[in-house]
Image (cartoon, rainbow, N blue to C red; front, side, top):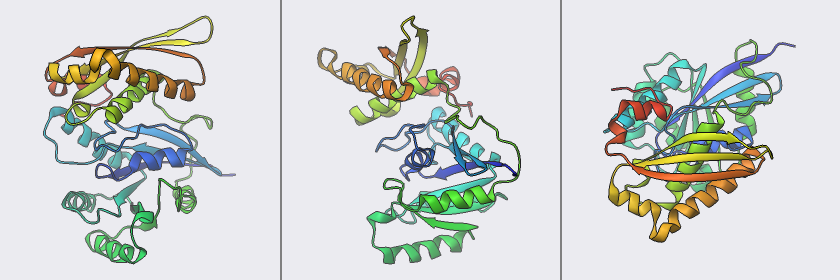
Length: 297
């Protein structure tokens, strides 16, 4: 029987539900999720088997107007994912409708030769009668090859989407072992899980000025693992917020991240967090490369 395999870029504005969709399709957590925009910072590949087809989903950062060096690297990663893919899925928050940022994304996508599919997400949260006018409006800007209406949160409409993707992938050998879930190294996964808790438990400017790096990964004789992560923060005031009163917030971040890592790694985890102030880290090429991005200058 002929095997099929291809790359599928997941594109869209921040908070469209891209990472939620990737995790749902993969059937496991492979990329972090939070209600805050710009959660995903670099491309994460998730491997999904569907019959004789291997679907390599490429979760990309949300596309927005960049201001910092880090922002430019994130947006470049998103567009790079689109260029490399066999199919690109534009994920649209149906509740938000056709916003100006979305219009700009569609305009740029109209210049690519890749097949673009429209995926309206969060359709369970708006009246059905609003969906067709929104779809028609988007198709006027770009004649999408296919259109799907889904709820990534509830898992609605995903079987049809997976089946069509599996049928569309080009014939060829698998790129990854069939039991792989993601190409994200465990060290980077640990750093991302810690960053997810920072996003969930801090507010205002702190989450987007924090970077996490796994410094050491030590395998223990009893099968457990010790993970030491450093959190880089831009200003002293942000560091104080992150640590909290008598260290209460950083302890809670560590506790919840450790529980999530135990579940994902299926082994005991000893997690240690250190917080360092590093001014303008998001304008530093070395730090940007350390979190898995190519510096866009």
